[in-house]
Length: 69
Image (cartoon, rainbow, N blue to C red; front, side):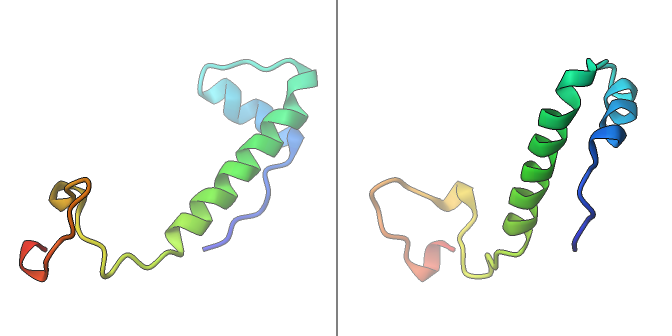
């Protein structure tokens, strides 16, 4: 799934909706940060975790057997 980048002039209404009024000089850095976060989330969504054991089965320093999964 891809999304269009959030533009600086679109940041203000979203921030106000969340109760966070932004000064005009904050719009560019906030939109850049939001776009970066969207990119990271998109990369995480693309990962295949089919063979990954659930976090509750993880024991630090120990190898998991197939029976534990």
